[in-house]
Image 1 (cartoon, rainbow, N blue to C red):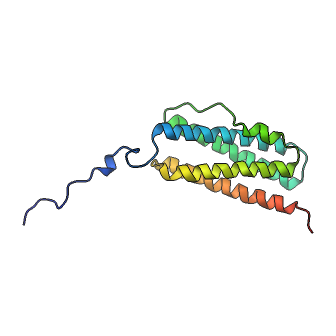
Image 2 (spheres, helix red, strand yellow):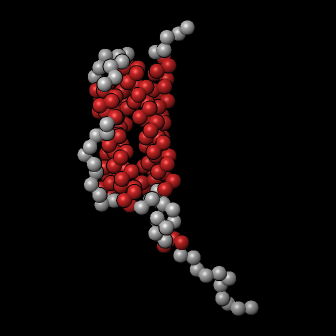
Image 3 (cartoon, rainbow, N blue to C red):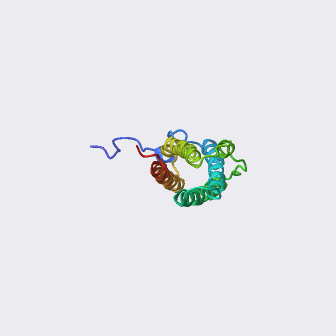
Length: 163
């Protein structure tokens, strides 16, 4: 019998994130800025919608969505800065498209499609994030968007004409 280990020491924990299949810093910053621009657009659409005419439940939902979007803008900006980058100041093109829709139900349906886009982006990005704090924040953002989508679907269903 020898005192030598059966296999060599594993240095996987010290490997670069990209080597291990995770997103690198630049990819993460780009994705976070893209999400930030989308969240900023969503916040502006929800704010404008909350000041429009419509059922009380719709206006309440728009205020809630606006508060959530603002929360995620702050989180994304904080995370981008933590990564040593500058948060984008742009607003996604979604804003102009959504605000061009005058009917509250149609605008809400369009906003929900935007929320679904964010969910898909988060679902694709999250498994590639190695940083526990950022991963946790993105998971919370994902859960929040899924809850908002469900509430918007319920709001839309409550205003559909009954046969």
